[in-house]
Image (tube, rainbow, N blue to C red):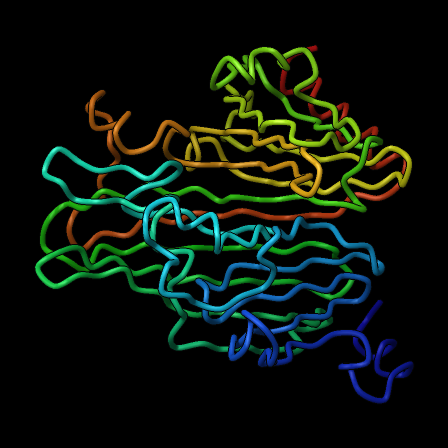
Length: 351
């Protein structure tokens, strides 16, 4: 629909789309600043105090993402202290893992400690801009800001993030630029920890993935390898599973992952490039109270920093250089849209 046609039907465009700053005022989330974004049937919240990560996503009122037991919260003194991160990891649509480490906490040979999933996820944003404006016939909502991971005599890495959504398109585009503003090469490990939850995620859900090879992380996961792509009902105290996937992609590296709820005829699609994210992991938990499916495009392995140090494959960013990453979340709705995803998977796999 053209701009003129929309304006005939609304008094104020905020009736259907907006970026609205909010501050939370209860419990662990007290004082946390965020931007609530509305785009037609799509609603999401990006946290200014936590790397502009998206903590909530709804589509037509249906909750898409997982929220862990601690719930919404701002920064805490234990955010980045070893495994204590599990007391502050909220889930959300995604949280940013890195830059010095991803996955399990690690103590290096020199005694230096690297916390679980790194420090970026708790880094507050600066130079924040939240804007909603017409671009021709497109109404575009944009949130952008800058996060810095830095230490005296240490690293100086800057993440500039831009989150964009357009009225009429049920999608969210996350575009990141990582700059090494120091004068030495710096390790940059980066993983987007994307988390789906109930009621979108249920025993009617499955993972649609163009995977060429599936490798369980451990023996517990190996015992569940035959059902990696489907969700069962919650089971009390069932341990988590993690699988590593080798994905097929198009000639330009483009690929996708989709969580499909067949009963609702609804899918959440992640679009990304394997050249930017050569690793892809799946986190699956059917444990009661921890019912979640995590999708993890990454430039590093789930085995973390120690694995890459030992293999000599730790990724470095040269001084005064920039890397760009892009991840898109998209809603696909209806039988034909889901069939198109299945056909795309088959095409990528040469089936």
